[in-house]
Image (cartoon, rainbow over all chains, first blue to last red):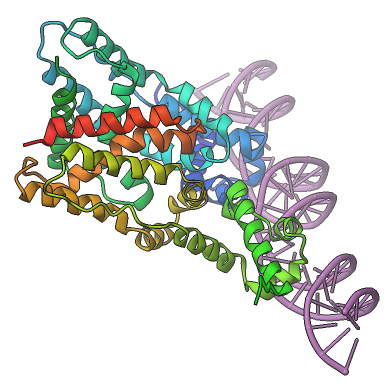
Length: 202
Length: 202
DNA sequence: ATAGGTAAACTGCACCGAGTAGTTTACATT
DNA sequence: AATGTAAACTACTCGGTGCAGTTTACCTAT
């Protein structure tokens, strides 16, 4: 079996792709099913054959985007490796996530809707909420190991991510700033680790 | 002249108040002029007597909210006072800003629109963009004074604010978390200053 | 394997009811 | 008589449906 894309399946993918573009451009309310169907080069009726409503289609897009993350990034605590080295890996992989096209797409689509729809916020969060835990657990273990000062590990993780996102997420999302270059990314990662360890290193 | 609110002026204020609620609840696209007029207990015609279009009304709301900040918060660098004390004031006043009802209203109204309308983003930013400069200048002066390690003052200011917003802004905006209690606010401010000085103190 | 037939999917359009921003009309209050 | 009002109205777009006719996919019979 080669590509073996039945026409129906192909149309379905066309619709999903077009819907993603439409929602990304205009948001949920601004998106129009007519315009979306035209984009997909598909009859509107076909759209409704695949998805019963605009909302269902929207949630399909969100779920699809949520699932499209390799979802690794769960750093493991190593008692013997230097802390800065391990944290640098964590920072780099977080920046890489923030830089990835699909993650930025997901946020452009969902975040503005989340302000007025807490259920969407919590469902997306829950749908991909593990990577935050990764860092939190790492910090906990390093604290228990006596290599970091004891403190609120959750709060510390929030600080760590806040340092990164302040330069490599929020400005790009709302002020359409360009994403940091690889050199800038390295500075951000280095400085985040530096600052974090300056505060928490035992 | 006492309160001397002409009936026309009173209606104008009713309309502005109702519009603010409507936009805050439903966003620009979701808001309806009919519902808004009903909210203000005013004929729709009256709305259009005061504001020629939905867009103009929206921009009036945004401008009004922008102007409603006392806009102090511009901390002054004092070569003799302790750094932590001065920074603590800065952190506290930033948190106070983030906590203020009108600032949160402004953000609930504008931020989701900013994702798809860069012009609105830049115009609002410009309309209240000075308080960022305050901290930036303070850090610059402290660096020139030799009391902070020399570094990119802009980046450092971004880190400082990022630490605060990670706990007292973004989670509340998108995940409708409750705002930190005064005790939590104190922890955030303390820890932000602590971390910042651990990294930058000369 | 090829031809033929069937069922499912797609198309394009007309259409529905609801709701939109914005305008006009006709009445009521002062 | 003058002003401001509510209600009706315009011209549209929206999400969603019904339907008639066409295309595709697939299974069967030769």
